[in-house]
Image 1: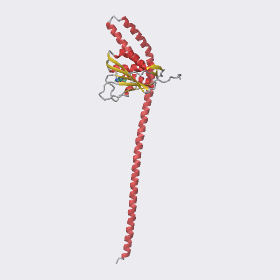
Image 2 (image 1 turned 90 degrees about the horizontal axis):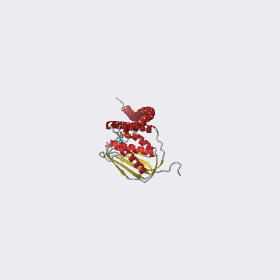
Image 3 (image 1 turned 90 degrees about the vertical axis):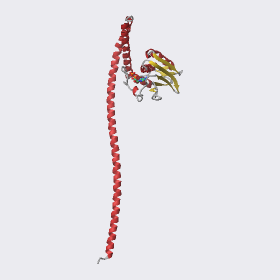
Image 4 (image 1 turned 30 degrees about the horizontal axis):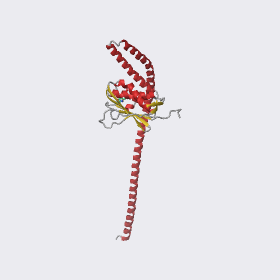
Length: 296
Ligand code: ADP
C-alpha cells in the first residue's frame, strides 16, 4: 500500500517547481521580447545611419563635381575674357570700315543690302563680346545721384529703333526721385531687358515700362506681350549661358542681375497671374536715393 502523505508532499513540490518554472519562463519571455524590441530599435538606427551616410557620400560627390565644374568655368571664363578683349579691337575696325563701305555703295541696292547684313553681324558680335566682358568683370558701380524717370526715358529712346516698327511703347508712372546709381550699368540693364522684350515679341506687340515708388524702394516693371517664360524656368533664365535663341549668349540676364545686385537691388520675373496670361514682366527693384560716400 502506498503512503498518502509523501505522495501529497511530492505533488506539492512538483506544483511549486512548476510554478517556479512558469515564472522563470514568463520572465525569460519578457526579457526576450525586450531584447527583440531593442534589436529592432538598433536595426532602425543602423538603417537611418546608413541612409545618412549614403546621402553624405552623395553630397560629397556632388560638391566635388561642382568644385571641378567651377574651376573649369573659371578657366574658361578667363580664356573667354582674353579672347573677347582681343576680338574687340578688330571688331571696332570692321564696324568703321563697313560704315565707310556702306557710304560707297549707297547707290547700289544689292551691295547696300549686303553691307547692312555685315553691319548687323558685327553688331551681334559686339553684343556678345560686351556681354562676355561684363560677365567676367565684377560690376563695381560708380554711383551718382540719377533721376530715375529720365534714365528710363533715355534707355527707351536709345533702344527704340532696335525694337522693331511693329512694337508700340507705353510708358507709365513716375517716381520723381533720384537714386544713387551707376547710370551706365542701369542703362545697359534696361537696354538688355528692352532688347529681350523686342526679340520675344518678334517685332510686333506692346512694350510697357512702368516706374513706381515702393516705400524705401523704386520699381521699374518691363512688360511685353510675347509668349512669356515657360513655367518652371523663372530662375533658370538668369543662369549664365542659358539661352533659347539660335544666336543668343545667355549672358544678358545674368549680367543684368549682377549689375542690379551690385546696387543692392533685385531683378526678377513677376509670377504669371495665371497659366493663360500672356507675356513676361521683369521687375527691377532699386533702393531710393541714399547719401553717397563723402556726402554728409
Ligand atoms: P539671350 O538673350 O542671349 O538668350 P538672356 O540672358 O538675355 O540671353 O536671356 C536668357 C533667356 O531668357 C532667353 O534666351 C529667353 O529664353 C528668356 N527670356 C529673356 N527675356 C524674355 C522675355 N521677355 N520673354 C520670354 N523669354 C525671355
